[in-house]
Image (cartoon, rainbow, N blue to C red; front, side, top):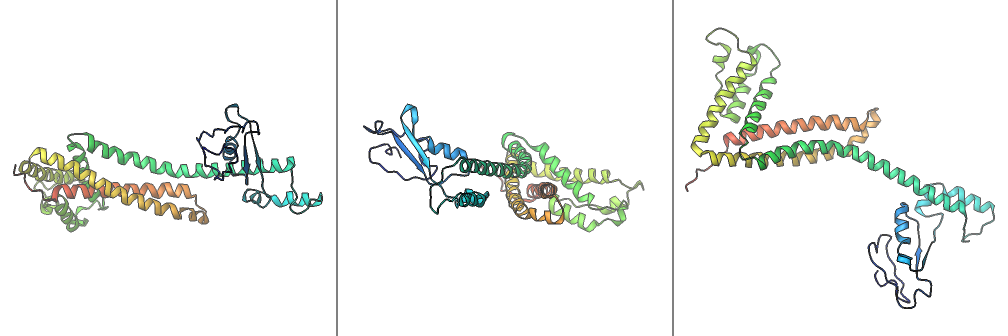
Length: 317
């Protein structure tokens, strides 16, 4: 491209080639009229056409440009080129005859404006979908940055344990403790927190007063904390703090990767909701939020289970 200004040179390039290239004119080229640009088609974007024209006549040098196009070009066919062709036929224009008319120029400019408006609408529409993911990404990155930058994330771990216990207890909708699925609770608390839940103590307390959900939660947290403190005393504070950061980062990255794939799958088919008289964007936001909540819940559960159950070899140093 840099040698396109030499005498006798004919350079064929795509519409975007030569951007930022300083095309210097060779000896005697200025006297011949400078660099001449020939465009074989108008681009959908006027900006691209102007960039092509801008290759000539740079920095005070002489130059010229001309575009040749057909009413059958993609840009013209999109926007009523048949009407222009019909007018030319009535005016007696022959097949292949060169047409130079303001009507054609206006039609091209109108077509370019319509394409640019359509493309802007598409970009705006995509941005609305991207904004949903941006909000979720901020939450995930806040969790990651906390694990990366803070030396002690014990408080965040305690919140994860508390949230996990809340979710397990809230599954039981009945206010009557006798109707709860205690087998499932005992199994889950044992497999995740290494807590052996004493259902007899909960269902038949010594003071004969029925325990509330908050009381049960406090009981589970107390036993889980005792298990974790014992684990910390065996492994040492330095090792357990580093392990916590590793587990949080590893788990959130795994779940976030799976969530991104699931959101892509949702995005691909969400426009079909319009056939059911539903707003695809609102449906995407609603289902995306539910999926994100499920991802955070799964992250908490996996993090807690790994922290409590992963076997860490003691340091022999």
